[in-house]
Structure formats: structure tokens, C-alpha cells
Length: 111
Image (tube, rainbow, N blue to C red; front, top):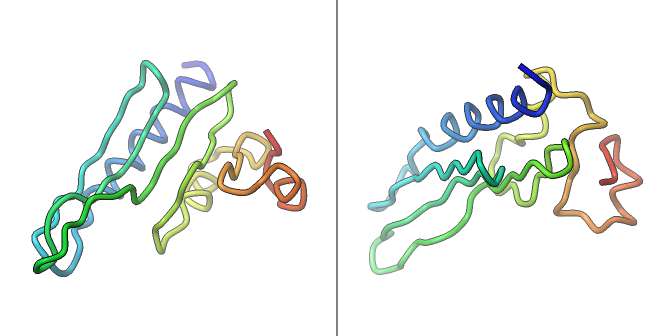
């Protein structure tokens, strides 16, 4: 298995794991969205919390140019740490939710 295929498998597994956690309140479903063909992965919340509609991204990860781009992380368990624990090197993880000039100040890849 090449490096990018390995990253796809790691990201898919983590997305499915994060999607297995259900919110503690409301009638909210958690969905794993896995598009390995376009290397796009998300966890979404969809449903109702009382009279309030819930529909939004919890986690968004893409694989671009052989690197894992964290586009959004609204979790309490940062996926960057989970990726490191799974063996992904820091230089292959991009914190895409930071502007490029801030990314250079992190211990992760710039892009």
C-alpha cells in the first residue's frame, strides 16, 4: 500500500470513529461522508435539538497533493493528534483552517 492509500485508510477509519459518537442531547444523527475518489472526508450533524435545526460540519479533512489537510475541526479531540498517533508525520499534516502565514508558525506542514 502506498503512502496516500495508507492515509486514505487512516482518515476513513478516523472519520467513521468520530461519526460513531452521538450528541448527548436532541434528535441528531451523525453522518460520516467518505469520498475516497476525490479525497474528501467529513463528519456532519443533522437533526433537531428541541425547536432548533442542527445541520453542520463537525470535521472536514481532504487529502491534497499527498498531504492530509484539516479544513475544519470542531471536535474536543483534535484529529491532528489522532493522525500523529496513527503514524502520519507532522510534515504531511496541514492545518488548513489557519491562514498560510500562521501555518508556518505551527509544528505542522505549511501546504
